[in-house]
Image (tube, rainbow, N blue to C red; front, side):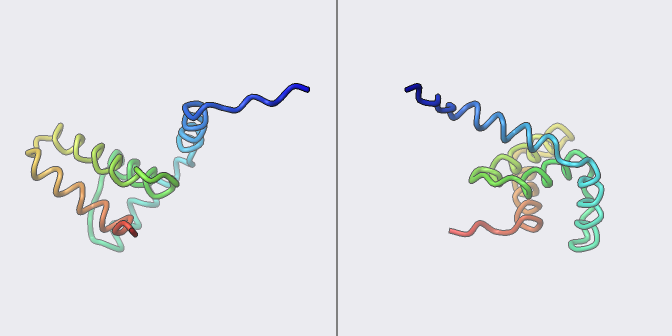
Length: 101
């Protein structure tokens, strides 16, 4: 009798990542409008993309990953490290919500 092979964790994660990349492209502009209307914040397409991924991902690290990527984008645009970290955290807290422990 041949037992089925178990998938290793890396292949499962990469499968889920591929599914996330396949999110409809219309979600990014919709979320930009939603964020602008609900919170009065204008975010560009790149930041909105990370927000959409974090909002639709079912992982435990989604908030930290999105915060880091938004922080990196803000630092590339000339913000200081401390200021960009604060802004990124505030954006994620507003849009996705505070963590539930």
